[in-house]
Image (cartoon, rainbow, N blue to C red; front, side, top):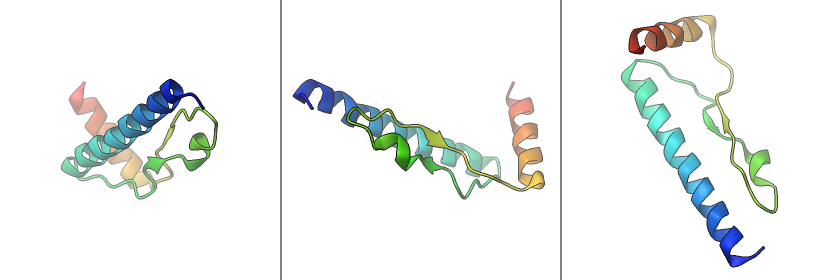
Length: 74
């Protein structure tokens, strides 16, 4: 991998990590926990990683609280 591509990949991964933290913090403030929230490891297994964020599954109650939080934010 070229140095420029490696730098770009590192920046993308750092941005994804920051986004996961920001989303987790925002959800926590809304009283919502998504235990499976994380960077999808398979999306990092490429020569030029392009991280995807995995929200994971949740209970119907958590999904309803998430929908209510999004509605009130709009």
